[in-house]
Amino acid sequence: MQRPRTRSRRNVQLLRPEHAVLASETRANTGALAAAAWLAARGLFPTDPNWFVRISVETGETRFAIEIFAQEWGYAFRHGGRTSWIRVTDIPFVHGWDDFNLLDRTPRLESVGSLMRIVERDHGITLDRTCSLIESSIGGEDLIAAWVRSL
Image 1 (tube, rainbow, N blue to C red):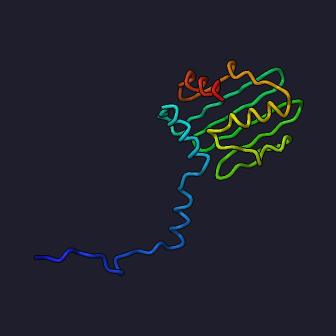
Image 2 (image 1 turned 135 degrees about the horizontal axis):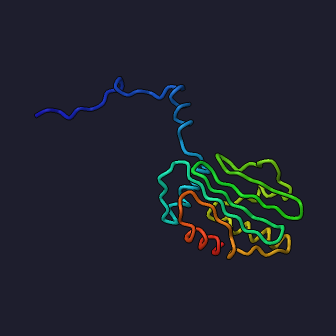
């Protein structure tokens, strides 16, 4: 009877620093993971690796936009001549302006509706989620519109 083969220490390759750099460069970022989870929750499965969804909820001169891409997601709020534009890749960051100090209030993508309610309350506005503008490279506009209405 043969003994089972076991790995000896000399057969184990240690991760060298140059391999660690490559491994960290190829991992998905939090924006990409949130975007992928958002897609899966809607049952949407794009064939294009560079897919996108742009959503805009506007009331008068006030606009709350949500942009979801394969690699990241973000939102912009414009009201009274001021703007906050936040993007989420590895971490949330200000993309140009944060006049409303929303960076520290950035929720997870799945909870962005809570942020919409906060800005509505803080500024005495109501965003009409039933009339959202949706641009999508993956289709599913009806599913996306239903999600917006639920926010």
